[in-house]
Image (tube, rainbow, N blue to C red):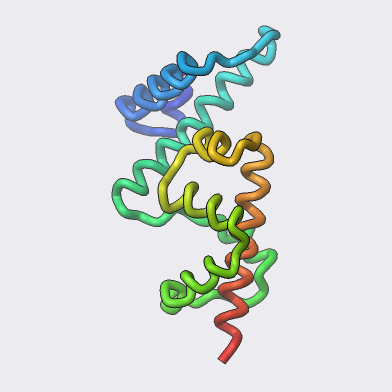
Length: 151
């Protein structure tokens, strides 16, 4: 598992940290894998997601913003968003989101909660979390584009 984590996290110490965090989570809530064939896929997916969470926590500790999926958002938002004025318009755009969308974005990005922590906080599964997170990001970008277009 450490070797697999090293594919994503190039530092071997960080890869060990990823696996230790994953195993610690499994001790708290043991996974339920019944078939041997699905075990390897489950391990690979778990290490991958834990590596992503590790990167997010590291970036949050360094005060860096999360990486955005530019292609994903630009397909939905037609007008580009000027980065200079985003900081001034962001509080208004966040206020216009629904409470659920705002809670999701704040917990995922501002508090840097892991995917599992967000799932537990909202009481939803992984697929639903990613789907709602995508929708909230797209809606936020659309609101920011609307505000930029208005004089």
